[in-house]
Image (cartoon, rainbow, N blue to C red; front, side, top):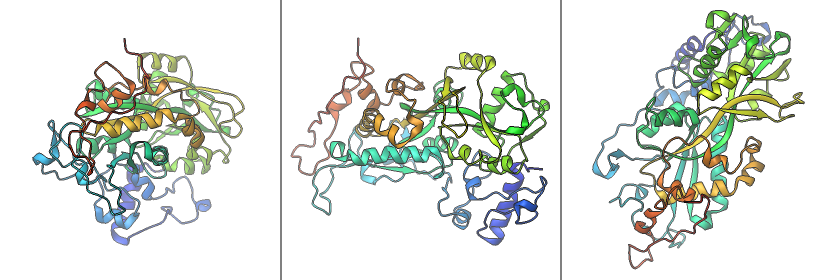
Length: 445
């Protein structure tokens, strides 16, 4: 049996505590070829990194033992002193100099900056983007965005760094703790926050990013050509409490497929999908992700192919939920896929914390939107994204005032500029006004 993830996680944590670092191994032997379906892999550090919604958070000591790239998601012990509170929200963003937020806050500015070691007297700013695991799409996207910010630094003087996390659920918790300036989530997360299903105090929209399309990977000999064909099949729907499992159950319900209608359900971390397909433990798995995606490409050599999630019930699901969108996977995105595939999904959504400096959010929004063509060259998953989509789709929360200024959502969206304090050691008057160059994106009536 392809063990449920919670069992293998428990086994791996016990091994980690007792024996220190371990490599990927099998429960009943080190030789995958000699193992049977009853032989399940122990959870490695990558699987642990994706399992924040399932298991107790690992201590810092355990993290160091498993993988130095593991993110420490321990709850922040906050003092909530006045220097960390802005309009009732605690604000202690990670990876940002104290001078950028611990201040007599005036709504947008920072304390006066001293001359740097290299003699640079001009002000500089900082932004950190929480994303996902370093092997995942979100981290890659955050890294490319920061690369764009680096290339255009002379325009805005905003330093940018991508930060790893355990994914969307982790990003939400980190924002609630005041540790986030900007984070990547999903459009359904954005919608749930706005509609009180899963509130995120202080969360604001910035823009939507790439499509996250649902796609099945199936064994060619399993006879699966649509969602309706999954009855009596063995599928991995992800761990209990994970976003992927929730999406799976929502989709299966739409097709009137209950858990009892499936041949076997596995609740294994997504890291093991390849082992499941190639080891013939499962017939199918599904991912909502930007495409092309290595976790899918890497399995296609094991007598597997890709299948869309489209169909009449899917169309109805999209109609019922404004955070879902009909999507089409272009032909030849994956090996052997010579025709477009209809499916559905949502948008990756960039959100910001309300206390975050509107100057840096303005420039983040502007650089990403105005350099979409560069993003398309860097990451093929942006090939289907249009400039208008970034404003019109998936942004259910009110816009952060920095993003609202760029999108010009109303006539007063840029009023914060008149209060902006220029953090320049050369400035004779601390109340000098920054007149940001405007781009009329959204026509205001």
